Length: 387
Image (cartoon, rainbow, N blue to C red; front, side, top):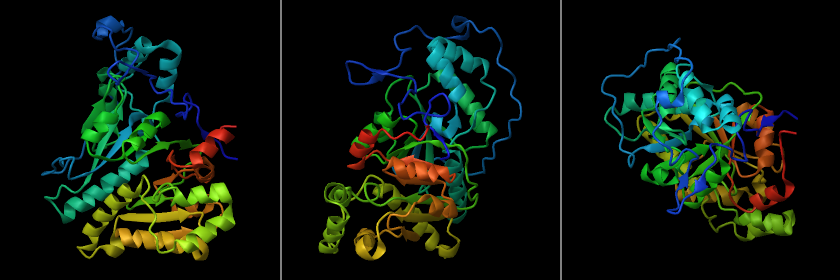
């Protein structure tokens, strides 16, 4: 089996070692540096000056570009640890503490981070934005990317240098200095939150924010640089876990019977339904300009459901919601990895780690949605793909 790293030193962790925080009396989480005096370079005792910037590319900002109001945009909040590769810095923090960590970051602030698992997805969002601006120069219905990090503001210089180096268009930062970012996510009207910290992802889901935990596979399939491709599982991702509960409790035959009996009863919404809806609204802006066959957004349903036995209820639910899926794959329990390898999505969302692991084996960037009855089974199995 191809390994997918869950080790925080290697990439990121489902054990959530990202600048561990404790809860304060007001309910906010406080980092280990909270309550310390203000940091400055003299206090940190830097032994070497930051290296000069090398290889930075000029930012390409077109004339007339403006920043959309959060309430009008499709806001995607991305943790710095999934946008970039920061495992070396994480190791310094865990082994040497916050003071050495900050000193290390400042001494290396002109060395850009390498791209992380969310990087191709973010680049694809920017590609869509460029097309939208061509068709609708004054519209604020765009993707708005917010970089979210537990880091102290001192680390912001390195993050900005990295963003400039990779020519990313990210102007909105949320640097919480160890505090929980969840309240800020709500203020940003966040449509999707991607993080390496599964506990924070669960907090976001509990607040009604679409969220998922990302992992880096050891191999990564090349993805399109002209079309954003997003793939979703069905139950407990786009839909509720109602039907999955029947399957887990009573088996496959009862599941099929339940779906036949409730064929005309809509499934309740799942945690990622709102994000699919947001993608659909942007797709329709291209359709309105006659660009249906040249739309830079394509969506996929990749489900273990059987088409004839249980697929019709899923399709009727999507139609009733007014949502279109460009491609629907009903696999009847077959492995999802080979199909995802053909699709080559920028991101695939699933509630079961088994399918996340299978996707990673084939080089797909997969994100775990810790929602629904499957999480109880995941906890019992303690499945690890790092074995």
